[in-house]
Amino acid sequence: MKHVARKRFGQNFLHDKYVLSSITEAIAPAPDDAMVEIGPGLGAMTEQLMRTLKQMHVVELDRDLVARLEKTYNPAKLTIHAGDALKFDYGSIPVPAGQKLRIVGNLPYNISSPLLFHLATFAPQVQDQHFMLQKEVVERMVAAPGSKTYGRLSVMLQWRYDMSLLFVVPPEAFDPPPKVESAIVRMIPVARPLACDGPTLEAVVLKAFSQRRKVIRNCLAGMFTEAQIVEAGIDPTMRPETVGLAQYVALANLLK
Image (cartoon, rainbow, N blue to C red; front, side, top):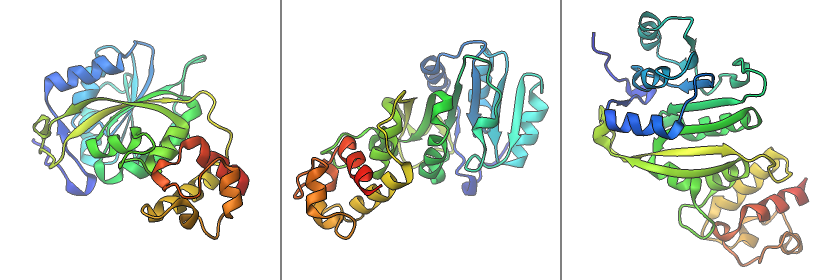
């Protein structure tokens, strides 16, 4: 029986064999990898990965898809975690000694940002992440200071990860086709992130980008004095999108 994609779960199922093969090649799974897939859907990517992997985990919210996966795969090879990826404890997945978790997935566009922030809390336990996301979101993630797409998502994720846009995926690779282009992003956790309190950095960045068109001095009024902004190595007349990660960290450390 054909599964009908559900809008409330943001379901768009990847079916293009060339794209699936390209993603698998980018991930380059090894037999003993500790791999978890978020939102396996109909199992197109799962099937590709399991041709190499001895065993893997998946996190799926849709009960109908969970039942389908249970019927399709041997539980000794595929461990299915039925639940919300936004609340799942990725640290609970057993990982062999000396290894770290590898995370992959075609992430639902409607929850992509909060899910990326949730996953960032597990970054020290992760080897790498390969995700399919809306192209516009990936461009914001990898954006450099000074670009129009540089913002809160760029700063907060670049503090935790080295990231690169690998390739673009057209809408027709999915069923149903989304109205936007998608892209594959590779995220490798930074071994030693700049020392900083995460929630404090988040608060600073959120306030800075709440009024992008204003200069940083005005954006951060009430949180920092002009002297403190200068102390962090920032020209008070700069706009938020031209301030680099290290400078935002310096501000957060002054506040803390």
